Image 1: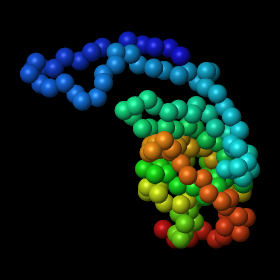
Image 2 (image 1 turned 90 degrees about the vertical axis):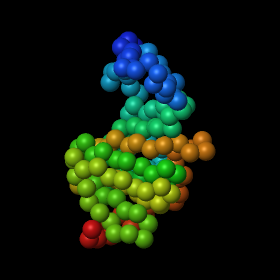
Image 3 (image 1 turned 45 degrees about the vertical axis):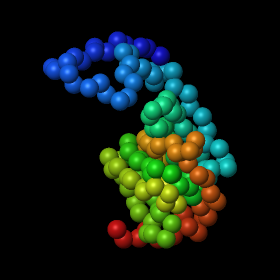
Length: 162
């Protein structure tokens, strides 16, 4: 990790109140070469999934995230995030579904939002890999609640209409 000094900004008016969060004077950079890649556990994923650069920011932040790569046919189990989840798709084509809703297709460059506490899944299509950056917040000590696996019937069901 390389730490770089960040220049402190001065307020134009010294009577301006200080921000309520704690300021730091360094920027933290995690280099790609230093990021760990782990296999997604079979408890929460079907197929080959790798997770790189997992992070959890310290208080007062609640943000956590990682880069996930799904090989063709790979997918998450059903799960929910207490404060929702943002997925930024960087490569490939994938499918996603919120319980009770249509199965949707997404592509590299798309940004997905799953609302708080909504049961959902996401993964690659059967014939193309997919990579996304996942960003979510921790609430009461957890960023996710894992549920049952997505069945082959659910995964292979026809796409819905948006």
